[in-house]
Image 1 (tube, rainbow, N blue to C red):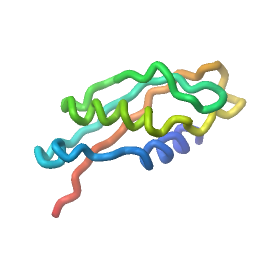
Image 2 (image 1 turned 180 degrees about the horizontal axis):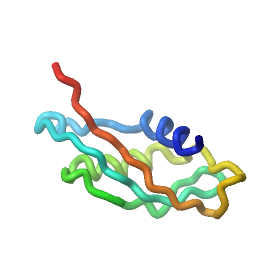
Image 3 (image 1 turned 120 degrees about the vertical axis):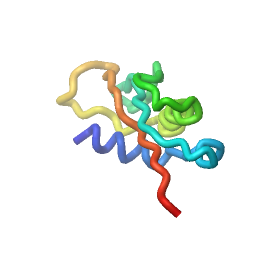
Image 4 (image 1 turned 90 degrees about the vertical axis):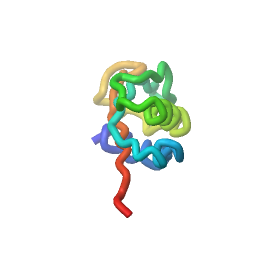
Length: 94
């Protein structure tokens, strides 16, 4: 699916903020944005907070770094297309 492509693409640009890592902060933030037919993201905003400002800011930065994104397929109508996707931050045990 296109959303799967989008999530995979964004995952390449997600970084774990060092301070959040030190504080052992984890969570899922949902980000809303528009994607035009060329894959350019705009109107990037938080749809739902992770509960941690550091992770929320990184969620927005992930979309900014990842633009241009995979463009929406023809069967998805709208230009731009409005989307909301989760960005997950989970620490692995050491």
